[in-house]
Image (cartoon, rainbow, N blue to C red; front, side):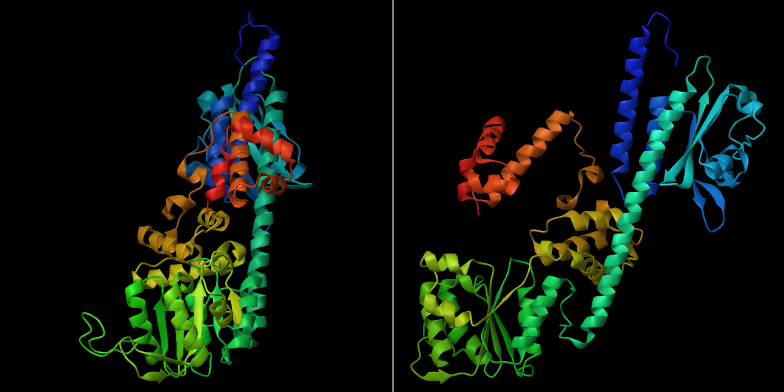
Length: 524
Protein backbone atom coordinates (compact mmCIF):
# COMPACT_ATOMS: atom_id res chain seq x y z
CA UNK A 1 0.00 0.00 0.00
CA UNK A 2 1.16 3.51 -0.75
CA UNK A 3 3.94 2.54 -3.29
CA UNK A 4 4.63 5.08 -6.06
CA UNK A 5 4.21 4.19 -9.75
CA UNK A 6 7.97 4.55 -10.33
CA UNK A 7 8.69 1.42 -8.30
CA UNK A 8 8.48 -1.73 -10.47
CA UNK A 9 5.66 -4.10 -9.45
CA UNK A 10 8.22 -6.88 -8.88
CA UNK A 11 9.96 -4.77 -6.23
CA UNK A 12 6.62 -3.98 -4.58
CA UNK A 13 5.83 -7.70 -4.48
CA UNK A 14 9.23 -8.55 -3.01
CA UNK A 15 8.94 -5.84 -0.35
CA UNK A 16 5.46 -7.02 0.60
CA UNK A 17 6.63 -10.63 0.86
CA UNK A 18 9.59 -9.62 3.03
CA UNK A 19 7.28 -7.66 5.34
CA UNK A 20 4.88 -10.59 5.52
CA UNK A 21 7.64 -13.07 6.34
CA UNK A 22 9.03 -10.72 8.97
CA UNK A 23 5.58 -10.36 10.56
CA UNK A 24 4.88 -14.12 10.49
CA UNK A 25 8.27 -14.87 12.04
CA UNK A 26 7.65 -12.35 14.84
CA UNK A 27 4.15 -13.77 15.45
CA UNK A 28 5.56 -17.31 15.60
CA UNK A 29 8.27 -16.27 18.07
CA UNK A 30 5.72 -14.43 20.23
CA UNK A 31 3.28 -17.35 20.35
CA UNK A 32 6.10 -19.61 21.59
CA UNK A 33 6.91 -17.39 24.56
CA UNK A 34 4.18 -18.53 26.95
CA UNK A 35 1.71 -21.35 27.45
CA UNK A 36 -0.85 -18.74 28.56
CA UNK A 37 -2.47 -17.35 25.39
CA UNK A 38 -3.48 -14.16 27.23
CA UNK A 39 0.20 -13.30 27.66
CA UNK A 40 1.00 -13.39 23.94
CA UNK A 41 -2.09 -12.25 22.01
CA UNK A 42 -1.52 -8.58 22.89
CA UNK A 43 2.06 -8.61 21.51
CA UNK A 44 0.80 -10.44 18.38
CA UNK A 45 -1.74 -7.69 17.70
CA UNK A 46 0.95 -5.05 18.33
CA UNK A 47 3.21 -6.76 15.75
CA UNK A 48 0.33 -6.73 13.24
CA UNK A 49 -0.15 -3.02 13.83
CA UNK A 50 3.58 -2.33 13.34
CA UNK A 51 3.88 -4.35 10.13
CA UNK A 52 0.45 -3.83 8.51
CA UNK A 53 -0.42 -0.27 9.50
CA UNK A 54 -3.43 -1.63 11.41
CA UNK A 55 -5.32 1.00 13.43
CA UNK A 56 -7.17 -1.44 15.64
CA UNK A 57 -7.23 -5.18 16.00
CA UNK A 58 -9.16 -7.67 18.07
CA UNK A 59 -9.10 -11.35 18.90
CA UNK A 60 -12.54 -12.62 19.80
CA UNK A 61 -13.45 -16.02 21.25
CA UNK A 62 -16.74 -17.90 21.13
CA UNK A 63 -18.02 -19.14 24.49
CA UNK A 64 -19.95 -22.32 23.66
CA UNK A 65 -21.87 -22.36 26.94
CA UNK A 66 -23.44 -18.91 26.41
CA UNK A 67 -23.18 -18.58 22.61
CA UNK A 68 -21.57 -15.17 23.14
CA UNK A 69 -18.58 -13.85 21.21
CA UNK A 70 -16.40 -11.50 23.26
CA UNK A 71 -13.07 -9.72 22.86
CA UNK A 72 -10.23 -11.64 24.50
CA UNK A 73 -7.48 -9.17 23.55
CA UNK A 74 -7.31 -5.96 21.53
CA UNK A 75 -5.02 -3.31 20.10
CA UNK A 76 -6.16 0.31 19.89
CA UNK A 77 -9.20 -0.16 22.16
CA UNK A 78 -9.72 1.02 25.70
CA UNK A 79 -10.83 -1.39 28.43
CA UNK A 80 -14.40 -0.06 28.33
CA UNK A 81 -14.49 -0.39 24.52
CA UNK A 82 -13.29 -3.97 24.77
CA UNK A 83 -16.00 -4.73 27.32
CA UNK A 84 -18.68 -3.44 24.92
CA UNK A 85 -17.40 -5.67 22.10
CA UNK A 86 -19.84 -8.58 22.58
CA UNK A 87 -21.86 -10.35 19.87
CA UNK A 88 -24.25 -13.24 19.43
CA UNK A 89 -23.74 -15.82 16.69
CA UNK A 90 -24.85 -14.28 13.39
CA UNK A 91 -24.98 -10.77 14.86
CA UNK A 92 -23.14 -8.14 12.83
CA UNK A 93 -20.18 -8.84 10.56
CA UNK A 94 -18.21 -10.51 13.35
CA UNK A 95 -21.11 -12.73 14.39
CA UNK A 96 -21.63 -13.89 10.81
CA UNK A 97 -17.93 -14.69 10.35
CA UNK A 98 -17.95 -16.88 13.46
CA UNK A 99 -21.28 -18.50 12.52
CA UNK A 100 -20.42 -19.25 8.87
CA UNK A 101 -16.66 -19.75 9.18
CA UNK A 102 -16.17 -17.47 6.17
CA UNK A 103 -13.96 -14.32 6.18
CA UNK A 104 -15.45 -10.90 5.47
CA UNK A 105 -14.11 -7.62 4.05
CA UNK A 106 -15.90 -4.27 4.47
CA UNK A 107 -14.09 -1.61 2.34
CA UNK A 108 -16.22 1.24 3.85
CA UNK A 109 -17.76 0.48 7.23
CA UNK A 110 -20.12 3.47 6.82
CA UNK A 111 -21.73 1.76 3.82
CA UNK A 112 -22.27 -1.64 5.50
CA UNK A 113 -25.48 -1.89 7.56
CA UNK A 114 -24.30 -5.12 9.20
CA UNK A 115 -21.31 -3.31 10.74
CA UNK A 116 -22.47 -2.52 14.28
CA UNK A 117 -19.50 -0.56 15.71
CA UNK A 118 -20.43 -2.22 19.00
CA UNK A 119 -17.23 -1.00 20.72
CA UNK A 120 -17.89 2.63 19.73
CA UNK A 121 -14.25 3.03 18.70
CA UNK A 122 -14.95 4.27 15.15
CA UNK A 123 -16.16 7.88 15.26
CA UNK A 124 -18.66 9.12 12.69
CA UNK A 125 -16.05 11.53 11.37
CA UNK A 126 -13.74 8.72 10.25
CA UNK A 127 -16.22 6.04 9.26
CA UNK A 128 -15.78 6.63 5.54
CA UNK A 129 -12.03 6.18 5.81
CA UNK A 130 -12.04 2.85 7.64
CA UNK A 131 -11.94 -0.64 6.12
CA UNK A 132 -12.68 -3.73 8.21
CA UNK A 133 -11.35 -7.26 7.71
CA UNK A 134 -12.50 -10.19 9.84
CA UNK A 135 -11.40 -13.84 9.51
CA UNK A 136 -12.46 -16.94 11.49
CA UNK A 137 -10.15 -18.82 13.86
CA UNK A 138 -10.71 -22.54 13.34
CA UNK A 139 -9.67 -25.71 15.10
CA UNK A 140 -10.32 -28.31 12.40
CA UNK A 141 -13.86 -27.63 11.23
CA UNK A 142 -14.84 -25.88 14.44
CA UNK A 143 -14.83 -22.06 14.60
CA UNK A 144 -13.56 -20.95 18.01
CA UNK A 145 -13.34 -17.19 17.39
CA UNK A 146 -12.34 -14.45 14.99
CA UNK A 147 -9.44 -12.11 14.24
CA UNK A 148 -10.25 -8.62 12.92
CA UNK A 149 -8.37 -5.51 11.80
CA UNK A 150 -9.26 -1.86 11.06
CA UNK A 151 -7.27 -0.10 8.35
CA UNK A 152 -7.50 3.30 6.75
CA UNK A 153 -9.14 2.94 3.34
CA UNK A 154 -6.91 3.58 0.35
CA UNK A 155 -7.63 3.28 -3.36
CA UNK A 156 -6.10 0.23 -5.01
CA UNK A 157 -5.68 -1.72 -1.79
CA UNK A 158 -5.57 -5.48 -2.39
CA UNK A 159 -7.90 -6.70 0.35
CA UNK A 160 -7.37 -10.31 -0.73
CA UNK A 161 -3.70 -10.11 0.29
CA UNK A 162 -4.51 -8.57 3.67
CA UNK A 163 -7.25 -11.14 4.25
CA UNK A 164 -4.86 -13.95 3.30
CA UNK A 165 -2.26 -12.66 5.76
CA UNK A 166 -4.84 -12.37 8.55
CA UNK A 167 -6.03 -15.90 7.80
CA UNK A 168 -2.48 -17.24 8.15
CA UNK A 169 -2.08 -15.49 11.53
CA UNK A 170 -5.50 -16.80 12.64
CA UNK A 171 -4.35 -20.31 11.70
CA UNK A 172 -1.14 -19.85 13.75
CA UNK A 173 -3.20 -18.70 16.74
CA UNK A 174 -5.49 -21.73 16.31
CA UNK A 175 -2.46 -24.05 16.33
CA UNK A 176 -1.18 -22.31 19.46
CA UNK A 177 -4.57 -22.85 21.11
CA UNK A 178 -4.47 -26.51 20.07
CA UNK A 179 -0.98 -26.99 21.53
CA UNK A 180 -2.02 -25.34 24.77
CA UNK A 181 -5.14 -27.50 24.97
CA UNK A 182 -2.97 -30.58 24.45
CA UNK A 183 -0.58 -29.39 27.18
CA UNK A 184 -3.50 -28.76 29.54
CA UNK A 185 -4.89 -32.22 28.79
CA UNK A 186 -1.48 -33.75 29.48
CA UNK A 187 -1.20 -31.86 32.77
CA UNK A 188 -4.73 -32.93 33.71
CA UNK A 189 -3.78 -36.50 32.85
CA UNK A 190 -0.66 -36.28 35.03
CA UNK A 191 -2.66 -34.85 37.93
CA UNK A 192 -5.25 -37.61 37.59
CA UNK A 193 -2.46 -40.19 37.36
CA UNK A 194 -0.84 -38.79 40.50
CA UNK A 195 -4.17 -38.91 42.34
CA UNK A 196 -4.75 -42.47 41.16
CA UNK A 197 -1.28 -43.47 42.29
CA UNK A 198 -1.81 -41.80 45.66
CA UNK A 199 -4.94 -43.91 46.16
CA UNK A 200 -3.07 -47.01 45.05
CA UNK A 201 -0.17 -46.27 47.39
CA UNK A 202 -2.30 -45.72 50.48
CA UNK A 203 -1.85 -49.28 51.60
CA UNK A 204 1.79 -49.44 50.53
CA UNK A 205 4.92 -48.22 52.25
CA UNK A 206 5.04 -44.44 51.84
CA UNK A 207 7.48 -42.39 53.95
CA UNK A 208 5.84 -39.35 55.47
CA UNK A 209 8.98 -37.25 55.09
CA UNK A 210 9.55 -37.81 51.35
CA UNK A 211 7.53 -36.17 48.54
CA UNK A 212 7.17 -38.02 45.26
CA UNK A 213 4.94 -40.45 43.39
CA UNK A 214 7.03 -41.04 40.27
CA UNK A 215 7.88 -44.59 39.19
CA UNK A 216 11.53 -44.01 40.15
CA UNK A 217 10.55 -43.02 43.70
CA UNK A 218 8.04 -45.85 44.04
CA UNK A 219 10.89 -48.25 43.31
CA UNK A 220 12.88 -46.59 46.11
CA UNK A 221 9.91 -46.95 48.49
CA UNK A 222 9.66 -50.66 47.67
CA UNK A 223 13.34 -51.16 48.55
CA UNK A 224 12.95 -49.16 51.76
CA UNK A 225 9.96 -51.30 52.76
CA UNK A 226 11.97 -54.48 52.21
CA UNK A 227 14.96 -53.38 54.31
CA UNK A 228 13.38 -51.26 57.07
CA UNK A 229 12.42 -54.10 59.41
CA UNK A 230 15.74 -55.92 58.94
CA UNK A 231 19.13 -55.40 60.59
CA UNK A 232 20.99 -55.19 57.25
CA UNK A 233 23.59 -52.52 56.57
CA UNK A 234 22.25 -50.10 53.94
CA UNK A 235 24.28 -48.13 51.38
CA UNK A 236 22.32 -45.18 49.97
CA UNK A 237 23.70 -43.78 46.72
CA UNK A 238 22.78 -40.80 44.60
CA UNK A 239 23.80 -37.32 43.54
CA UNK A 240 24.15 -34.49 46.01
CA UNK A 241 20.81 -32.99 46.99
CA UNK A 242 18.63 -35.99 46.11
CA UNK A 243 17.55 -36.66 49.70
CA UNK A 244 19.74 -39.56 50.81
CA UNK A 245 19.59 -38.47 54.44
CA UNK A 246 15.78 -38.40 54.28
CA UNK A 247 15.82 -42.01 53.05
CA UNK A 248 18.10 -43.06 55.94
CA UNK A 249 15.92 -41.15 58.38
CA UNK A 250 12.78 -42.86 57.10
CA UNK A 251 14.33 -46.35 57.20
CA UNK A 252 15.36 -45.85 60.83
CA UNK A 253 11.98 -44.56 61.99
CA UNK A 254 10.21 -47.44 60.24
CA UNK A 255 12.58 -50.02 61.73
CA UNK A 256 12.50 -52.03 64.93
CA UNK A 257 15.02 -49.52 66.33
CA UNK A 258 12.72 -46.53 65.81
CA UNK A 259 12.57 -45.71 69.53
CA UNK A 260 16.36 -45.82 69.86
CA UNK A 261 18.96 -43.16 68.93
CA UNK A 262 19.52 -42.09 65.31
CA UNK A 263 23.01 -40.57 65.14
CA UNK A 264 24.36 -38.82 62.04
CA UNK A 265 27.97 -38.23 61.03
CA UNK A 266 29.09 -36.26 57.97
CA UNK A 267 32.43 -37.84 57.15
CA UNK A 268 33.35 -35.11 54.67
CA UNK A 269 32.76 -32.29 57.16
CA UNK A 270 35.21 -33.58 59.77
CA UNK A 271 39.04 -33.27 59.45
CA UNK A 272 41.00 -36.53 59.38
CA UNK A 273 42.56 -35.68 62.76
CA UNK A 274 39.12 -35.42 64.36
CA UNK A 275 37.05 -38.11 62.63
CA UNK A 276 38.48 -41.02 64.67
CA UNK A 277 37.69 -39.28 67.95
CA UNK A 278 34.21 -38.38 66.69
CA UNK A 279 33.43 -41.97 65.72
CA UNK A 280 35.05 -43.87 68.59
CA UNK A 281 35.45 -41.27 71.36
CA UNK A 282 38.62 -40.63 73.40
CA UNK A 283 39.99 -40.98 76.90
CA UNK A 284 41.08 -38.09 79.06
CA UNK A 285 44.63 -37.02 78.10
CA UNK A 286 44.60 -39.01 74.84
CA UNK A 287 45.83 -35.91 73.01
CA UNK A 288 46.31 -32.20 73.60
CA UNK A 289 42.95 -30.72 74.50
CA UNK A 290 41.39 -34.02 75.62
CA UNK A 291 40.55 -32.73 79.09
CA UNK A 292 37.84 -35.31 79.75
CA UNK A 293 36.60 -38.66 78.53
CA UNK A 294 34.26 -38.36 75.57
CA UNK A 295 31.91 -40.93 74.04
CA UNK A 296 32.02 -41.34 70.28
CA UNK A 297 29.13 -41.59 67.85
CA UNK A 298 29.16 -45.40 67.90
CA UNK A 299 28.59 -45.43 71.65
CA UNK A 300 25.89 -42.77 71.41
CA UNK A 301 24.11 -44.85 68.75
CA UNK A 302 24.15 -48.04 70.88
CA UNK A 303 21.01 -50.14 70.22
CA UNK A 304 20.02 -47.61 67.53
CA UNK A 305 21.26 -46.53 64.08
CA UNK A 306 24.42 -44.72 62.97
CA UNK A 307 24.21 -42.89 59.65
CA UNK A 308 27.58 -42.24 57.98
CA UNK A 309 27.08 -39.60 55.30
CA UNK A 310 29.69 -39.02 52.55
CA UNK A 311 31.36 -42.33 53.37
CA UNK A 312 33.48 -42.09 50.21
CA UNK A 313 35.52 -39.29 51.80
CA UNK A 314 36.93 -41.36 54.68
CA UNK A 315 40.73 -41.66 54.87
CA UNK A 316 42.31 -45.14 54.41
CA UNK A 317 43.34 -45.25 58.10
CA UNK A 318 39.80 -44.54 59.29
CA UNK A 319 38.41 -47.07 56.81
CA UNK A 320 40.45 -49.84 58.48
CA UNK A 321 39.09 -48.99 61.95
CA UNK A 322 35.55 -48.71 60.64
CA UNK A 323 35.87 -52.12 59.01
CA UNK A 324 36.76 -53.69 62.35
CA UNK A 325 33.67 -52.22 64.04
CA UNK A 326 31.44 -53.51 61.24
CA UNK A 327 32.99 -56.98 61.51
CA UNK A 328 33.46 -57.40 65.25
CA UNK A 329 30.99 -54.84 66.66
CA UNK A 330 33.71 -53.62 69.03
CA UNK A 331 36.35 -50.87 69.25
CA UNK A 332 38.60 -48.93 71.65
CA UNK A 333 38.41 -45.23 72.33
CA UNK A 334 41.34 -43.10 71.20
CA UNK A 335 43.99 -43.36 73.91
CA UNK A 336 42.16 -46.23 75.63
CA UNK A 337 42.70 -49.97 75.97
CA UNK A 338 39.28 -51.18 77.08
CA UNK A 339 37.28 -52.89 74.35
CA UNK A 340 33.77 -51.53 73.99
CA UNK A 341 31.05 -53.64 72.38
CA UNK A 342 28.15 -51.95 70.62
CA UNK A 343 24.89 -53.00 69.01
CA UNK A 344 24.52 -50.54 66.15
CA UNK A 345 22.87 -50.73 62.77
CA UNK A 346 24.97 -48.85 60.21
CA UNK A 347 23.65 -46.95 57.20
CA UNK A 348 25.98 -45.11 54.86
CA UNK A 349 25.50 -42.70 51.97
CA UNK A 350 27.69 -41.29 49.23
CA UNK A 351 27.54 -39.34 46.00
CA UNK A 352 30.95 -40.69 44.98
CA UNK A 353 31.61 -43.48 42.47
CA UNK A 354 32.86 -46.10 44.93
CA UNK A 355 33.71 -48.54 42.15
CA UNK A 356 36.04 -45.97 40.60
CA UNK A 357 37.60 -45.30 44.03
CA UNK A 358 38.20 -49.07 44.38
CA UNK A 359 40.05 -49.09 41.07
CA UNK A 360 42.15 -46.12 42.18
CA UNK A 361 42.95 -47.78 45.52
CA UNK A 362 41.27 -44.99 47.50
CA UNK A 363 38.54 -47.17 49.02
CA UNK A 364 39.02 -50.57 50.62
CA UNK A 365 37.37 -53.46 48.84
CA UNK A 366 36.53 -55.33 52.06
CA UNK A 367 34.87 -52.22 53.53
CA UNK A 368 32.94 -51.71 50.29
CA UNK A 369 31.44 -55.21 50.54
CA UNK A 370 30.65 -54.72 54.24
CA UNK A 371 28.73 -51.51 53.48
CA UNK A 372 27.12 -52.59 50.23
CA UNK A 373 24.90 -55.28 51.75
CA UNK A 374 21.68 -53.60 50.60
CA UNK A 375 22.01 -50.75 48.13
CA UNK A 376 19.40 -48.09 47.38
CA UNK A 377 19.89 -45.61 44.53
CA UNK A 378 18.02 -42.32 44.98
CA UNK A 379 17.24 -40.96 41.48
CA UNK A 380 18.17 -37.40 40.49
CA UNK A 381 15.32 -34.92 40.07
CA UNK A 382 15.68 -34.86 36.27
CA UNK A 383 14.66 -38.55 36.25
CA UNK A 384 11.50 -37.89 38.28
CA UNK A 385 9.97 -34.95 36.42
CA UNK A 386 6.43 -35.77 37.55
CA UNK A 387 7.48 -35.04 41.14
CA UNK A 388 8.71 -31.50 40.44
CA UNK A 389 5.30 -29.85 40.72
CA UNK A 390 4.45 -31.81 43.90
CA UNK A 391 7.74 -30.75 45.47
CA UNK A 392 7.40 -27.14 44.32
CA UNK A 393 3.90 -26.87 45.84
CA UNK A 394 5.11 -28.48 49.08
CA UNK A 395 8.04 -26.07 49.42
CA UNK A 396 5.86 -23.08 48.47
CA UNK A 397 3.44 -23.94 51.27
CA UNK A 398 6.28 -24.65 53.72
CA UNK A 399 8.06 -21.31 53.18
CA UNK A 400 4.78 -19.44 52.86
CA UNK A 401 3.99 -20.47 56.44
CA UNK A 402 7.53 -19.90 57.71
CA UNK A 403 7.72 -16.37 56.28
CA UNK A 404 4.06 -15.44 56.90
CA UNK A 405 3.58 -14.69 53.19
CA UNK A 406 0.48 -16.27 51.61
CA UNK A 407 1.35 -17.96 48.30
CA UNK A 408 -1.77 -19.01 46.37
CA UNK A 409 -0.28 -20.50 43.23
CA UNK A 410 2.69 -20.92 40.88
CA UNK A 411 1.98 -19.31 37.51
CA UNK A 412 2.12 -21.28 34.25
CA UNK A 413 5.36 -19.76 32.86
CA UNK A 414 7.12 -20.48 36.18
CA UNK A 415 5.87 -24.10 36.07
CA UNK A 416 7.19 -24.43 32.51
CA UNK A 417 10.59 -23.15 33.64
CA UNK A 418 10.68 -25.56 36.59
CA UNK A 419 9.77 -28.49 34.35
CA UNK A 420 12.31 -27.68 31.61
CA UNK A 421 15.32 -27.10 33.91
CA UNK A 422 17.83 -29.96 34.39
CA UNK A 423 18.28 -29.49 38.20
CA UNK A 424 21.97 -30.30 38.76
CA UNK A 425 21.44 -29.55 42.47
CA UNK A 426 18.37 -31.81 42.61
CA UNK A 427 15.71 -31.41 45.34
CA UNK A 428 17.96 -29.19 47.46
CA UNK A 429 18.29 -26.73 44.55
CA UNK A 430 14.53 -26.82 43.93
CA UNK A 431 13.82 -26.09 47.60
CA UNK A 432 16.23 -23.14 47.63
CA UNK A 433 14.69 -21.78 44.41
CA UNK A 434 11.16 -21.92 45.81
CA UNK A 435 12.22 -20.36 49.13
CA UNK A 436 13.78 -17.46 47.20
CA UNK A 437 10.65 -17.08 45.06
CA UNK A 438 8.38 -16.96 48.11
CA UNK A 439 10.48 -14.15 49.59
CA UNK A 440 10.36 -12.16 46.32
CA UNK A 441 6.64 -12.60 45.61
CA UNK A 442 4.47 -9.55 46.33
CA UNK A 443 1.10 -10.71 44.97
CA UNK A 444 0.69 -14.22 46.35
CA UNK A 445 1.87 -15.75 43.07
CA UNK A 446 5.27 -17.21 42.16
CA UNK A 447 6.13 -15.79 38.74
CA UNK A 448 8.89 -16.79 36.37
CA UNK A 449 10.97 -13.70 37.16
CA UNK A 450 11.07 -14.71 40.83
CA UNK A 451 13.09 -17.84 39.99
CA UNK A 452 16.91 -17.74 40.08
CA UNK A 453 18.78 -16.63 36.92
CA UNK A 454 19.92 -20.22 36.25
CA UNK A 455 16.29 -21.19 35.65
CA UNK A 456 15.40 -18.22 33.48
CA UNK A 457 14.43 -18.88 29.88
CA UNK A 458 15.65 -16.63 27.08
CA UNK A 459 12.17 -15.11 26.68
CA UNK A 460 11.69 -14.43 30.38
CA UNK A 461 15.08 -12.79 30.72
CA UNK A 462 14.94 -10.86 27.43
CA UNK A 463 17.98 -12.66 26.01
CA UNK A 464 16.37 -14.23 22.96
CA UNK A 465 18.58 -15.21 20.07
CA UNK A 466 18.36 -12.38 17.56
CA UNK A 467 20.88 -13.51 14.97
CA UNK A 468 20.25 -15.02 11.57
CA UNK A 469 18.81 -18.50 11.19
CA UNK A 470 22.18 -19.85 10.05
CA UNK A 471 24.00 -18.33 13.03
CA UNK A 472 21.35 -19.66 15.41
CA UNK A 473 21.61 -23.17 13.98
CA UNK A 474 25.41 -23.01 14.22
CA UNK A 475 25.16 -22.02 17.88
CA UNK A 476 22.76 -24.87 18.60
CA UNK A 477 24.95 -27.37 16.76
CA UNK A 478 28.09 -26.20 18.59
CA UNK A 479 26.31 -26.42 21.95
CA UNK A 480 24.98 -29.94 21.25
CA UNK A 481 28.43 -31.19 20.19
CA UNK A 482 30.05 -29.71 23.30
CA UNK A 483 27.40 -31.27 25.55
CA UNK A 484 27.88 -34.67 23.89
CA UNK A 485 31.67 -34.41 24.27
CA UNK A 486 31.23 -33.39 27.89
CA UNK A 487 28.98 -36.35 28.73
CA UNK A 488 31.29 -38.78 26.90
CA UNK A 489 34.43 -37.31 28.57
CA UNK A 490 35.95 -36.37 25.19
CA UNK A 491 35.24 -39.72 23.50
CA UNK A 492 34.45 -38.54 19.97
CA UNK A 493 33.06 -41.88 18.81
CA UNK A 494 30.69 -42.10 21.77
CA UNK A 495 29.63 -38.46 21.31
CA UNK A 496 28.92 -39.12 17.62
CA UNK A 497 26.71 -42.09 18.53
CA UNK A 498 24.80 -39.93 21.03
CA UNK A 499 24.07 -37.40 18.31
CA UNK A 500 23.26 -40.04 15.68
CA UNK A 501 26.02 -39.00 13.26
CA UNK A 502 29.14 -40.68 11.89
CA UNK A 503 32.58 -40.22 13.43
CA UNK A 504 33.75 -38.55 10.21
CA UNK A 505 30.92 -36.00 10.36
CA UNK A 506 31.67 -35.41 14.04
CA UNK A 507 35.29 -34.64 13.15
CA UNK A 508 34.21 -32.21 10.43
CA UNK A 509 31.80 -30.42 12.77
CA UNK A 510 34.43 -30.18 15.52
CA UNK A 511 36.86 -28.60 13.03
CA UNK A 512 34.17 -26.27 11.67
CA UNK A 513 33.36 -24.86 15.12
CA UNK A 514 36.95 -24.88 16.40
CA UNK A 515 36.09 -27.03 19.42
CA UNK A 516 38.99 -28.22 21.58
CA UNK A 517 37.60 -31.72 22.21
CA UNK A 518 40.63 -32.86 24.24
CA UNK A 519 39.76 -30.58 27.17
CA UNK A 520 36.62 -32.64 27.82
CA UNK A 521 38.75 -35.68 28.70
CA UNK A 522 39.54 -34.23 32.13
CA UNK A 523 36.10 -32.85 32.96
CA UNK A 524 34.22 -34.50 35.80
